[in-house]
Length: 212
Image (cartoon, rainbow, N blue to C red; front, side, top):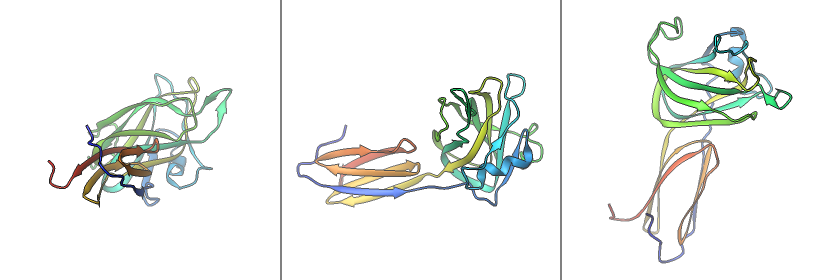
């Protein structure tokens, strides 16, 4: 439990983190391959649209980051388009990674590691999937169902969010925060108050100097 501070201390630390998958990265997909790179062009107005997602034809979107990169969250933007009340957004599936050199040229035969399952709500997003810190060169979003039954998914942007350890010293109070997300604000006012955007995952430890 966090110990209350005897005197009022106010401190705001704002960290903005937005790491977009580099446009130099190489993209590939299970269908509509020529459009796969639209999921990493930095434009929400363009998107990759898959073929129909069914139990027999799951769809996937993959990126070759060019090197092994550490990250701890995925942020996904849909196209915003829908049929009736259902968006062309991924519903269920999983994220996986690989450092197998053959992963891009022969994804079916490569070794993949599941990073996390997802079950996103029926919205255009952004959707955020957070998980433990991991590092891969090849990352694949595997979509098992769409919110439009037996329909396609449309992904405008796929972003990987980095891990960052932020430390601060404020009047004898030490703050260490492990962050994965686009922004975070930490406030101290007699006791630690935390206000985090939905896209962030923060582990906050507050201790006085010399405390274990």
